[in-house]
Length: 83
Image 1: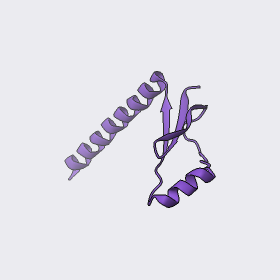
Image 2 (image 1 turned 180 degrees about the vertical axis):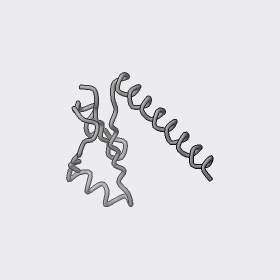
Image 3 (image 1 turned 90 degrees about the vertical axis):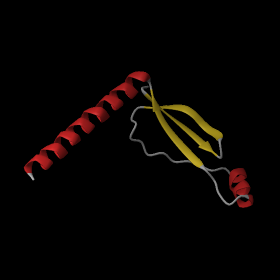
Image 4 (image 1 turned 90 degrees about the horizontal axis):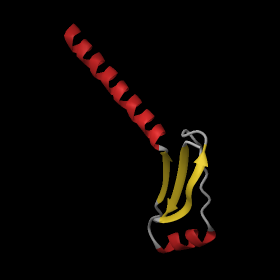
């Protein structure tokens, strides 16, 4: 799989690099009874969901981001030249 999901609650890994087929994923996080009880003693609970990919997938996404940024800059320059 090209993409993985890592889930952490209060810096404790719940799942680590679970393979997924699609980076645009709906993730359900089940919080254990122990973590809910611990959260009563603290005013917060940090939940982190990290979607990661292999190096080729990351290069592809970053390349698209640069291409879209360049298109946006050209559009802004074009709008300025019209005014």
